[in-house]
Length: 228
Image (tube, rainbow, N blue to C red; front, side, top):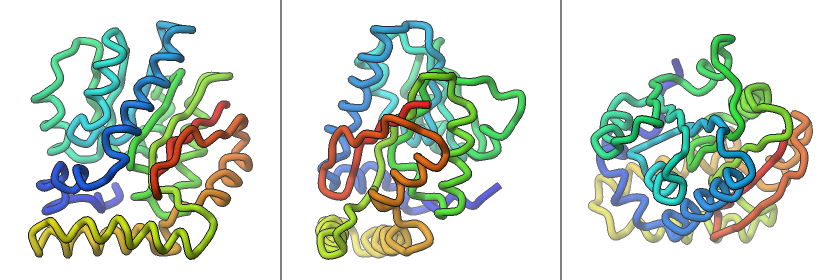
């Protein structure tokens, strides 16, 4: 099982870090409202959330979609335990597993919607290709993937500016935490991990996703939808 890159001090102070991102609340609400639009057309869809964290997105999914049937997947038992303490809903199923291993399991059923928030960028580019392909394979025909993630614009100067802009906000954290998240961000921006708009769209097209659309961008963060 791959090592969880967002662990230890980062996991312990997750909310402090998230609160310094302008996309944290707005884009999660937008994602939840997109799900609401989808469920107005078909109410019985099975939905998978990859990377539940501390129910950062799940709380909005439940707020706007109280009857949602949701599988919440995370590699971290600590994150799942935190989510379980806040979620009391019989339609929510918690699964501890690496995403690629879960999606690669032949016993895993297909889903109408597969979504994630700030998760895919934690995989290397090679792993990103693999997980997008596995998501495609586990999607029911004509249904969608929704991701909220760090997907930098193609313009290098703007990309660097947005990277520095977000990192400067971490000056409000304690020095040890600031150093840890800055190191994490630096690795996210490394060529082995960095998600870039044109490359991400091309990758999804190569996997045969269609109707790929960026629904919103807040600085370096993007809400993207793609259909099988």
